[in-house]
Length: 218
Ligand SMILES: [Zn+2]
Image 1 (cartoon, rainbow, N blue to C red):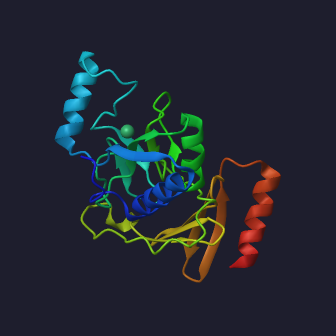
Image 2: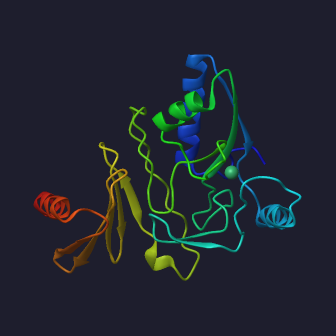
């Protein structure tokens, strides 16, 4: 389908900003695929394996891509509604500009390509990273938290996006902080508040500075 009814509200907000930006530049943009049912994804995957659906890649509908920024796990395609009830990818077409010009506008509103060789596939969030949106001036509205429906409920939490684009997700067991494109900061919470900070994927010096800075701010 090409409607936005099952797309995540922040993805919709970013797409709407993209439409406005495209019109400003005199470009056309449209959606060629948004949300897919499991049955549709299974059909695409079967045809892709058989060589009759010729695109660079199709996600296995049963794939497990690990934890999302909200704690629940990504399953199958980002075009399939996930455990929060929303899909998180759009395939788009455009006219009046080059692919590079289109990509530049997308990046400004926080949509990024995530599949090699598919210059039409965009997401607002990757496995663990919510993409920064430098061209969006208004702060995003609060993102709804899905109703509790699974055994992974204890991993669900609240998310806040800061003015600087940093994402703070609070879970009962701790806090995950994602400073835009930077590596994740995992903070364990104890009864009195803040417990040791664990950072991964960052040079040691930068890591210590960042941790100290964060500790000082809480
Ligand atoms: Zn796609």
